[in-house]
Amino acid sequence: MIPTLWAAIPLLAVAYDPLYALPLIVAVSLVYSGTRYEEPPHIFAHAIRTALWIVLFMAIVYGVLMLVAWGL
Image 1 (cartoon, one colour):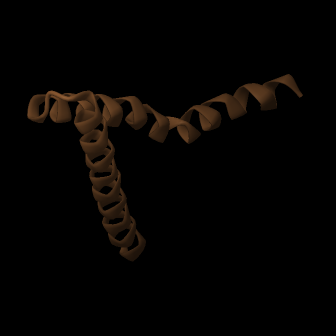
Image 2 (tube, one colour):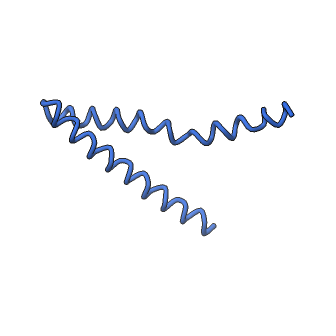
Image 3 (tube, one colour):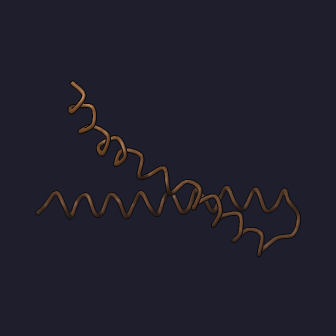
């Protein structure tokens, strides 16, 4: 039983790989918005829009890659 649990650990690690993108998206959005605006409400509003654009772009690229891989 123990060896099968140890074999599942790499699978669990792979399942959380997209979560590494979340802090990066937040940091990039806040820094980019902070260079454009000085007022915190404007920074946060623009950061949310920028984060949504980044996530949308990543989802589109992911979809295109899935379609390309599906055809192989």
